[in-house]
Length: 165
Image (cartoon, rainbow, N blue to C red; front, side, top):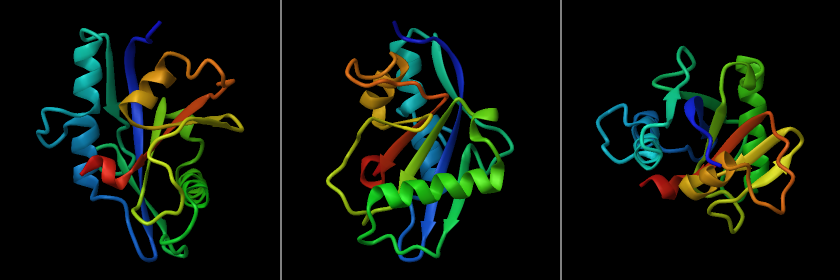
């Protein structure tokens, strides 16, 4: 059964040594429609759920729900997506504290150039469930893939930069 409610979402934008995730205003608009994008993650889930499900930007953490994470010590090009994801999430926790104390979902936007043959995936890492895109988000909201044990207390969404352009 699909979950219903108004979920708080924090978007983490990676800023690396040689590459960055798309601009904050583009990310916020693509996910929440904050700058007028009529077709975004929030609008589509709201429409498909007949208004029972929505995503709102976490207030007071970054701009319009997007928090810039400085990982400039890391070279993005050629680095594995897991290395970049872990660096982004770790730095965000260091900067902001426990993410699940103020966010229901965290979207991690990886910069172009990360190594790996991924577009979207779901996996369980410690107590964090990683998922991506509308399809993967939907699977997370319906308690994930049947073959995975999703015990996460905080869901994190990985979105590749090209998916938003």
